[in-house]
Length: 452
Figure 1 (spheres, rainbow, N blue to C red):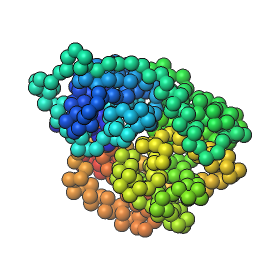
Figure 2 (figure 1 turned 180 degrees about the horizontal axis):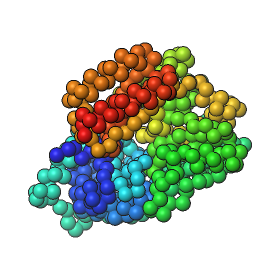
Figure 3 (figure 1 turned 180 degrees about the vertical axis):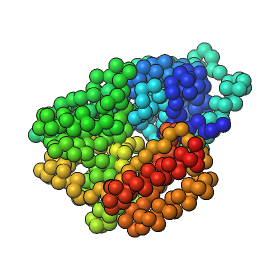
């Protein structure tokens, strides 16, 4: 039986893989494990619970709230808010844990549960393992120790969370955005209200797309995985830039005034130089992942900024940042962590800081993004294969070695199982796009034959 927790919580098709019973059981297990760890000692525990707009989030939220309250935890329901908002409010309200219901950029039928520890930080792997072990034990019949009477948790709505979070975002900006015209694509997701409001309060003229969630349309043709509509809107309205979020708004990708994409690596490069200029790029270091474009690595080297690379997943970026006190890190996908102001990737904050840099310098986003040249990179997601056998396949190892010999010093290969989806990711970089496509295609065929 595989581990329930992936790199970003528990995910699956809602009401099939991720059921109400599972959501309730995991929430009760989390409460018990944190109580045993001493998190609740000496006070009545409190949890912040939020969700994205998926229809399934309605019943899953009800199950999570019921589970926590039945375990003696008071619950503050903040409703539809981004993942980083739940993380921020968990810390700002001194709550003992936070729970976010979202499957991020995944299609609408999926959903997920992510737990935050006190302070708004992601739970340690060891605690997730204990939660899963406890959940499985009780799912097979072991009885819970249940409070009664006044010991059960109380539940109340916390509508103030929206304004508290937006005020935080605007309050940390180094300068206002007056004079900028910005298109915001909310992916019909959790940032559909938050992001436009924050940009508006910061002084920008805001045009919105993908900000009408109906529970069924999240990530459907809009957001950071579908940039065509954002590019068109930026050109149509003559905007200075556009920003796109994913379903739970912990990501941000951007589009410049000419409709060209600015990815997470480029955003990191721009913000790294901005933080260094402000004297807040601690240790003169930025943290990326092994998926970072080689062009980003070369640009940071040229600019005299140290780059530390981790495994893929913003939790690993965050762990590296916290361990060494680094201020900035992120992923090519648009997860950007500014640790002075957030405990996780925050797409709205990232977009605001990027726009603030444009406003402060008077330079276009395209000009700022030219600090790095993206080398051609091809990513193929291979489905319907056994991703658990990647590391053990001699056939795959030989194919990767052959590809690396062919690319030499001008490119690289990364082949890995996804931590959030049932796919194997094949990534190839090369100086020439045709070579990158050719090598990636051959490797994807080997993955299918070796693991299919």
